[in-house]
Image (cartoon, rainbow, N blue to C red):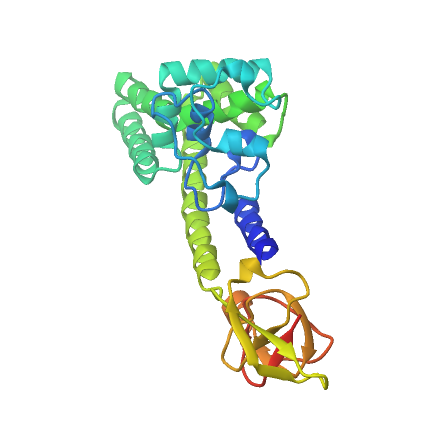
Length: 309
């Protein structure tokens, strides 16, 4: 049970991080709702937004080093941070926290309002250019787009560069700001707006998917029916007792009746039944499970009686 819970938690952590670039700034613990900007802030004592709540250590699949970075451990000298942070990253933590950049980036990152505002400003710049030609109004609209969509990108790229991690995201973001030097600031603003739109959609989809996984985990059985067997291998119903799945030692025999969910991963040692994984995989067609077959926790016993080790 505990192993299965850790595995499910790891799936949420691995697949629903909006920016998996390097884990100090991007990994989000299961169901914590923290963003990469708040976590950097928490690492230097809360920053502008104050200390963040500490996730329960018993529910997290992360190591102790990750727990320090992902929790709201405050009042810890920057020098005492885990060795994963290099000197440049520590400096960025100090600067961005002291200037409030983390707080601004937190608000603007994958924000619908920020993205819509960027598109509106771009449209205004285009209309101004078409009617009046280049001028102050067009430049102001373009500058606002850089401010709104550029700050989160600058924070992210700064940490990538500090880590000497040069990837396609870093190169494209640097190219965007290079358009200003080439006199093509409007084109750069358009690219930033496209990036902002992509982040907004990505954030919305990942939050939805994370919620679906949380609902799946919540639907797991809260008890398991532990049973003993007669010498001939049949389950002895009189020995039935309910146990929390997380407390089941390896080798425990669990009885699964028709219409019940399998509480833990295991091996079928008695009986046969059609089982459905529709609630997990979406596959509606039941499959036959018999003695010797592996069976996954969470699937539903459609008919029959199973004893799972």
